[in-house]
Length: 568
Image (cartoon, rainbow, N blue to C red; front, side, top):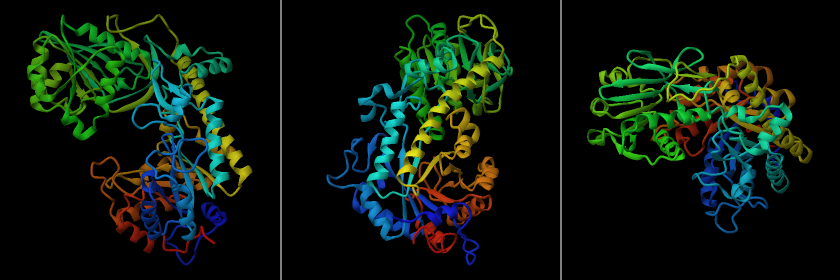
């Protein structure tokens, strides 16, 4: 085994090399995706690149979306692997010869890539997370003891059957704060807290949840039908010519509460003319900048509500039936001609529903006239109440008069219950791993924004550090070449200095761009320098495939030029 004693001392600041003040004494890691090791030839190529960059640790994905990239007695092996080939065993053998540590990277949450349940959830459908409307996401539910036991068994299988140096968790979180409405969690939550989970479904207003959006502000001709507790307009109705427009002034497609679907459903029924159709705009203009996921989610939402939406393109607007309803799911960019055609459609009697405000396009006169709004607001993400302002057919209202503080307290209990499931998983795994091999490192990667971890992913990272249930936390501080890394890692500065157990993850390419352009060596070295100066206990790059040869050479001649501290 590659000995990790000096590596862990390096993480805690104990293996510095005075002859190399510009180097790093902590982990010099790199993530290796499962697709990079599907054949021995591919693995050899990746190993050569890892060695060329003087990395001393590979975080190799061996559990991806429910399939194993090793010989497992608990999981199906990925069907595209060659018979008789064990990727993990091969990588470990080859890495040992190079003095490189191998941490097994586990995607221990999502169990599907194509939208259909993977083999684990086919066998155990009750293990999936459920949303407030009963919708299912193919993601393991950590509140269940049998799910935690399954993950623990997978980890111990790796520790006992392979000479691994680390267990590394990824996607071990909630996919969003709305998930967790399965019967088991509802029963346990009521037993532990005395609260019926039905309260949190909230089909009527007031509704409490975490809301996020890109709002329009300053209503001109639009009526405000509902607002958030901070006074920001949320649901608006505007008359324009013979038609009307409804603005859901936040990302209602996240479906944090049942009320959002109820409002959308009522809005369609309110606007729909006799024999009119339901249309949804696929805007290529919008997709070019923001991608097509929002369209896909909007289309699926309408189908879930029982509608049969007809997909249209921007050029179809000019011939659209004015008796119908057109849904624009997070269509932020509206070209001048499209705005003109949209205006004609509404003036002639059509109905339009905006889901999240077309904020970049509000300066267009037609967009202002259709929405009845005057200005773009500031993007927001906050927990709060959605409150009715006036009685209207679009707004489902209740007689609840609870103060905001009551909703906040109940929501805190609901979040704490789900956080506890992940805490217990990590505790059980950590104790099991250390009882088998105390030298195996347990780590987890998380988003770099700490408010996101608590509010959306329901991760209690401070407890992990305080109770010692992970050795290392790896925040992914991925920034574009023109963005400030210092700003991205600001949340972690004090923790990095106080604990020595935070290793920053950096992107070696422009994540999110179509061409996935590799970062220039000087930019990469600058990010590494900043991360180390701020107290990161080493560096891990995402990922080896997208790290350029020029960056590998710069690492080997620069911050990674010191002797390999992980080998002996």
